[in-house]
Length: 433
Image (tube, rainbow, N blue to C red; front, side, top):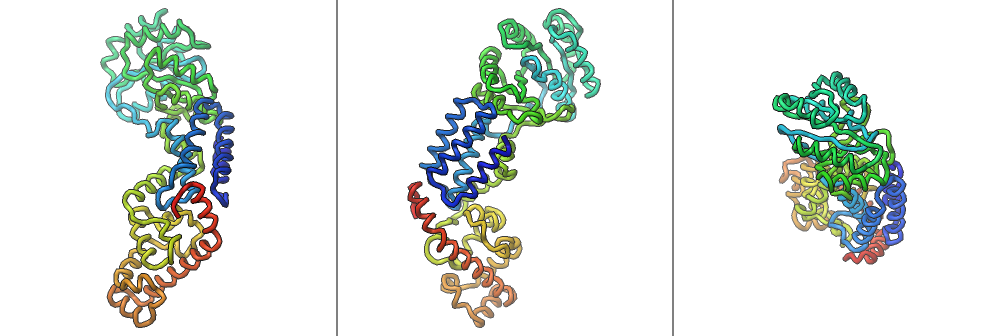
């Protein structure tokens, strides 16, 4: 799934034109990948419709190319399915009840959760109420021994009797994690048993533990258990060994329950807080896309810089000055050009350090309006005056002019070869040009 989604993004970035045909091709590719990864079909349809509508109808924000616009839409829609923000667990005294079917990894997850909280300074204990699986109690004790977490309660034929045997000890612990019984399939007797446990225990958190490879049946399981028990979260296990985690993840969207943790291996430390932004960024092959999207949004809100300054009229030092102002909010100049879709700018220009950009800004502050609008008039005498007024060396002024000229030449070539395509794309997407 990861490689296939990265190929979709490569298809976008490698396209010469972003038009409706490309959008529809991308949507078909995404549909195929998500369905093969067991994502709920209804969610895939909903996602497709939203991507199509926004890609064709929405106007990209200033400074964002159509390619970046399409990628951002895909990113945002996938993020919406997975619940948006990173999960933040409770960090106070509370009880946790784990529920799920056989093979989901509940017992191991109980120990992983216990160690997670223990490492953060909480006095933690576990209880097994699984009376259906003979080895369940012993398994939890062995895991508790590894994690140095006590297992409370005595073996008994009824879950409530087990809980009552641990009742006095419960008050001594900050975090108590209760592992419930599973079944081969979801049935009335299992739900009734868990209801009894929940009524007695009164847990603050009720987590469904679900395997990443469960497929589309995950949605039915999540919805039924949520309706019966009021789930507060889902823990997805075996995420490291399954390339088809779509069913488990989309089940959370269908049931409207957040993904809380993800099991990423067999060791007790292999449990991570679920971060939707990081997961989607990894899925799309852009590890920093979350930060990039955030920077773009902030830049749009705070900066007066617009990519249209480059495509309209002559590219001069006033335009370059605006870019430097935007850089202070958006990061290095390279990022500014990448957000504009001008990733082919000369390396010498785009890799200029922040300190040098600040020097350039100081130099341009000493230029007249005429010099900023018509840099070609800046000759030896003007260079001498600008250097003296800015407190910089004459060579630094000449270097700025060389850098600017290199950039202007590249933009002229870009406009000459690409502007017609840009005009067609903007016309298709109903954007002003």
